[in-house]
Image 1 (cartoon, rainbow, N blue to C red):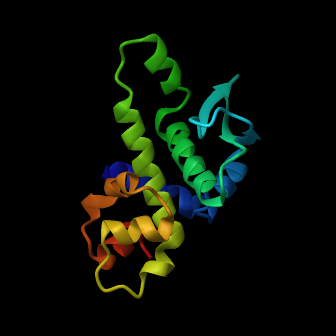
Image 2: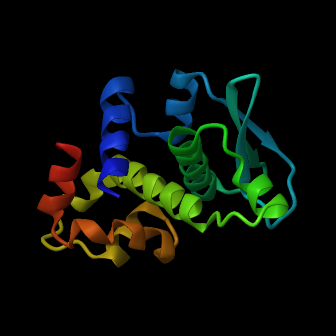
Length: 158
């Protein structure tokens, strides 16, 4: 998972932002809001080598940001691999892809909200979940950083 943190940091430095939608715009990734079934927050794919993501238009601000970060993780880490297609049409296990996309999203969202964590002496996974509005299960992907804010700050070179 350290490689994922490194990729997130490289993106932030290259594009000067940790906002997932802004990163998409700067990277030429199309973001489209659309009415999707309630149980689908979004998905990412590509068409003629042009990456895009579709986000459920019913998502609130925080869930939209979390979903955009997760789908951006799929695009950056997995390219044109469509995990929905893989899980529905093959016996390929996609849970690894989902965990990696969650880890990417967690790193990206923490980088965006790190200023809110600066005053805390000890940062727990629950603190990360609260500040970033990520589900606790997604925040657990950050567990490898330890619970010390200094470790978090070092991971992002802040």
